[in-house]
Length: 260
Ligand code: GLP
Image (cartoon, protein in one colour):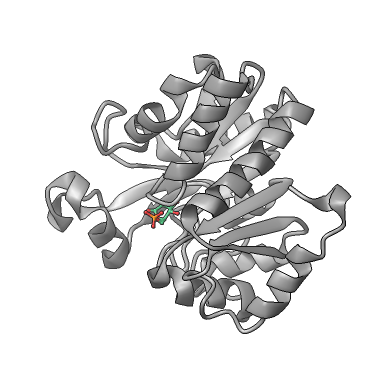
């Protein structure tokens, strides 16, 4: 795994945006996998800026989001649909018909999950999957003990995850109990994974995912099995990494042709 440690979230998000922008520039029909949560907000702001100021062209891309709450309408202000339109899709020129987010209102969850997997395959697979990480090590909404080879399916949220989004649902009691999420197997089928983590509260999960044993108890650790994962961290999120000095040295000594 390539680990890039930046002074703060703003710098780290700019590195991540350059990685995405380069992909979209090189491959206009790229398939982009998006995440929600606080972590990618600055990345999305930077992509919007690149669209506005440098005419980065998203007209050929296809997108797939990691997850959505079950029982929540797209128009609900705390749905991941609303999040994506508010922070990214309304501000870039991605065609609506090529945006995919799991349907939280479906009457047939297994069929919806199968079709989601099929849609990813038909699009040619995901070129880059943006990921955050939960304090318990989840990626997407694959909570601890998720199968490392799981596919898109329904999952039950942990209390910790429900607390994290309580504000958007009028308290933990209002947070949906279930979600549809890409599986860990789905995520690591992506050609590249771009993991972002910022702040002290992510340090333990980051250290366990990157340097700990590969275990379903830390779903993010499955990325150790992925041939091309780049983790872009701020100093605080990297603060519990044993090999942090080495990662910084490696980044500082990258050959020019490998720089982002
Ligand atoms: C969420 C999402 C994840 C996200 C994680 C961390 O609930 N399903 O995709 O990465 O939790 O959230 P945040 O970025 O707000 O810390």
